[in-house]
Amino acid sequence: MCYARFAKTRTLAQALVEGGKVRLNREKVTSSSRLVRADDVLTIRMPRDVRVVRVRGFASRRASPSGAAALYEPMDGHDTGTGTAGDGTSSAAGG
Image 1 (cartoon, rainbow, N blue to C red):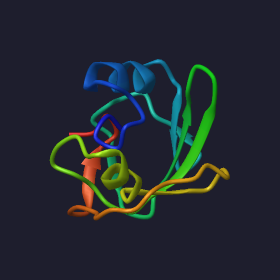
Image 2: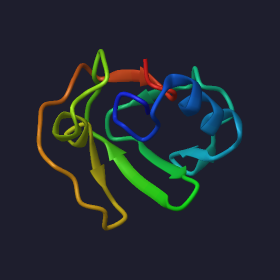
Image 3: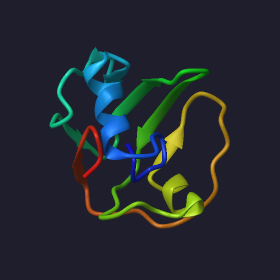
């Protein structure tokens, strides 16, 4: 999640997951090591917003805003930029 810029750091991404603020395909995720695959749907409850996205790819490091936008498809009306996707699997916290 931090590589796709939903959280500023891996620690903050882990706190979102362990705080019960993330769902993976409608199931609450409580472990940041939970496997995420391409085409999975993430629901992320942020402090001021709820994001619903379909995972399209992964990155090996924190991406630029346009590169990060290519990692997911918004399903909640939020707009994204363009870029390239990664390899196919990652953990919920991103890494």
